[in-house]
Length: 250
Ligand code: 13P
Image 1 (cartoon, helix red, strand yellow):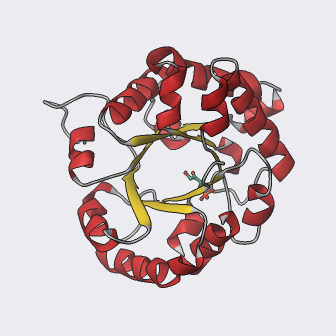
Image 2 (cartoon, rainbow, N blue to C red; image 1 turned 60 degrees about the horizontal axis):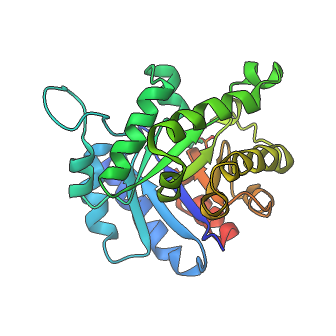
């Protein structure tokens, strides 16, 4: 049995004040979330404070990105050692915003996955097609290429130490959610690809859905057999909305 995971990707949002209030709200209601694991990924400057606030609570924390380099002269970058130092459990790698806005290639994303895993944290590997790619009928080829780059780099067994997030780019921040059937189809495809390498890894790895998940649509998405929770953007910034999503996962 896979434990569902709901992770909030706060992206570049929040202030110390709004984040303190958001955490208060999440912690006030987290007791009603029985079976799902919950995590939040704040912007870097807030990680220490968020970690202190959440230590000892059921809510884990993680980062939205990490450098593929170990250390050194990389101005503006943050290393996995630093993130581990602040007890991050998760690090998102290959989010579509990183791929499209910051030019991260499949190879860079694979290197980040390896780095995060080697540091003892769980990479949340994002994959997903653009609207153009979906309409061209190449969704599976795109997702397969993105996944293959990581499997080629770290081996299929290592995928078990991470989490996969299927995030169709056209559904991110658009209010246009993939239907549960559309999402399930790609999730099953991803699990099938992994099964071609290692049946146990395929069976055990969590595949989250991300893209305009809200309190109102979470339950029907999470009811699908290969959807093991969600990676939540906008709705993770509103405590009640985020908690509704967490409860829908378990
Ligand atoms: P939204 O939930 O705002 O669509 O963002 C999804 C996402 O990109 C999570 O990583």
